[in-house]
Structures are given as C-alpha cells and as structure tokens.
Image (spheres, one colour):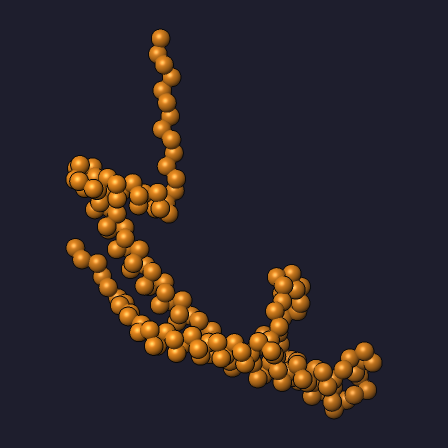
Length: 162
C-alpha cells in the first residue's frame, strides 16, 4: 500500500527570499501604525464586529447631525478617526486571514503527510528490530525516544513469592 500524496511542494530559494522580503516590507509599513494588546486588554475591551460597525457608523452620523446629545467627555472627531482606521484596516485583515488560513492548511497537509511517512518508517524499523535485523534496534530506540506519543508506563514488578 502506498502513501497518498496530496501535496508536494518544492519552494525555490529565490521565491522564499522574495516572500520573506515582502513580509518584511509589509511589517515595516504596518508596525508604526499598529498596536499590540496584552491578553488581559483583549479580554477586557468591548469588541466591534460587522453588526456593531454599522451601529457605530450610524451613531457617528447622529453625533454630527445632533451634537446636542454628545456628552461633554466624548470627542466625535476622535470617534470618526477610529472608524476610518477600522474601515481602512479591515480589508487588509480579511486578505491576510485568507492567506493565513491557506498557509495553515498547506502546512497542516504537508506536515500530516510527512508524519504519516515517518510513522510508516518507524513501524517498519520496529518490525525489523523485533526480527533482529542489523542496525534496526538502534534506529528504533533512537526514534522511540523522540516519538511524541504517550510515555510508556513501567511494567509493575511482581512481588517476590515465598
């Protein structure tokens, strides 16, 4: 039985270099305008989604049209700057999320196929070791130390009989 191979990527060095430089350029362009929140901050702040964006934009329209209801401690200009920032960045996020998802899927599939192949080899070498084939036991022991499965439980020792 042969292993099903759904993906086979050989990424040339020049393409890897080009992608890396593009990511560095994107980072250089975005870092000065982006912020990083702590996990606690992310948890505590109210979040705006698709539905709340419409609410926020409509509220901003009313705040400009009917300023008598704007609290003294609220800055409508700052609100509009924040709305514009969200509207400018959301399309980029959508594109990056799509790319991120495709990268994750490609890595997952490539990794899965490599892991399946490694398991096939490991099983083969373990069988060879059980049949005392030369060098197989050393390989099986070495790979067994690195196998990410559950640690083997020590076999219980039978108490001495009298």
